[in-house]
Length: 454
Image (tube, rainbow, N blue to C red):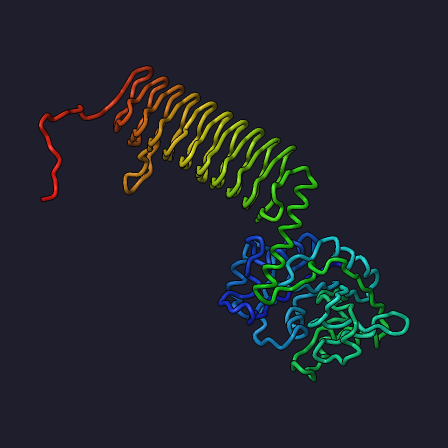
């Protein structure tokens, strides 16, 4: 049977105390619902339906690049009512998997196991978990043969039912034909005045359907986010899992509790990452890369033997083998460094290429520039690439030597092997293999005295 997925994402999230819809709050810098949709799409369903309510347009805009169908729930009348809004878009020959937009860490293999249990169109699958402190969750009530009899929400449960530790994770799968009919049979005669999706379990029992359960062994994968504390708890758990995966792959983490991964990381052999590092977007690390403390890297390809010292910010760059970066360096988007390039402290590079064995070691800004090989750029050098309206390019030839405190006013070309004297402002192309400088003559005024207070 083909698979259709419904993701419930209409909740306001009152306990978040936020103007942002709950499912758009971020875990690992990605909206909660993105985590759910990514996992849903990995199941290769025929369709994914997002039931939205509060802040619906924001939710749809955030999901605009996903192949999903948005379904509005104008009144929040419970989970059963929410699912009913999506059912007109689903055909009778489908299996319907229902997920929660605020439960971000459900694993793909868990959902695959749940789906695999539905081997005929006369069965129902429920994801459960056993909790030592099950307060707040609907309890799985079983009969004397151990079969599921019903799900009882906590507000409807008596003291005996509240002692049950197996709870409903809020995720289930059912044939569309049954689900569509059961939804019409729900009522809101309960403490919340809502149409509970969980009530369909008792209806399935009455019709003698086979009810399968998949019991998760990890409570975090079924934990929902209802407040900032739960969000922070899941963030720390997620980061812990990312750190474990890296270490199991051979990466040395100086302190696994002080690394944040907000994307994907591919790492080679003998990589070392110091404390308080943030890795975001798509990161590729070669062999024997060393990343110093307090560094932020986003969308970067970093080759073998690169060492990045402390307090660097690196974004959308390619770094060649054997480079040395920092400390306190900033590499901005569209920067490409070839092998054995040295970028030192308080150097900023933007939209530039630097060829092999060149050095920019101190207090410089290089923007919109092609730097040749074996170039040395002295401290305090800047490329003046912006005239107030347009950006212009600087080209520095191989083996050029740029003296300290130089301004290169683009567009300009510095010839190969050229030397620029310290303190120069260069506004014209300079010839290769020659010294070029521009500076006012030094003067000493005899008899001059500094002003003094009267």
